[in-house]
Amino acid sequence: MDAELSLVTANLAHAAPGKLIYDPFAGTGSFLITSSHFGATTFGSDIDGRALRGKKDRSLLLNFHQYKLVSKFGDTFVSDLTNTPLREVPGVNKRVFDAIVCDPPYGVREGLKVLGSKRPEREKGPIMMNGSWRHT
Image 1 (cartoon, rainbow, N blue to C red):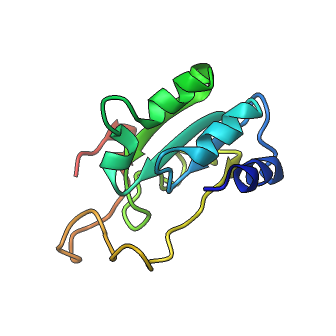
Image 2: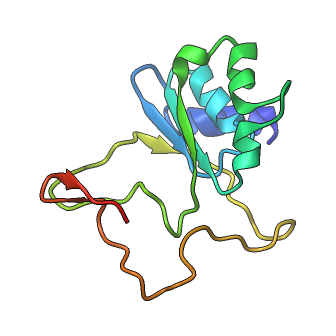
């Protein structure tokens, strides 16, 4: 992602101290870094865990170290938006993030990838029921 476009996007999202920003297509973290530059605490996910983990000398977390923004790094996890763990459970959780910033994939360079069950009949219910965790 172009650095200027990333900074403009974080600015439009009102990234600032005390804000929680999420990038569902984090990749190597350009939007997370720029949002953290403005003082926001950032979280991200990506369908490709390799992009998040990186290699020995290159990773998303090392990018935060390079720019001295580690204190603004929340966390990342592997997920796709068709089966995200960040779904609303009625009566349990409300809005968590102040903004979502991303450069969504357009499907031109990459083939369609989806995580999760190959059985569409499987229930996709809440992760908490009656105040206790439900493991699916």
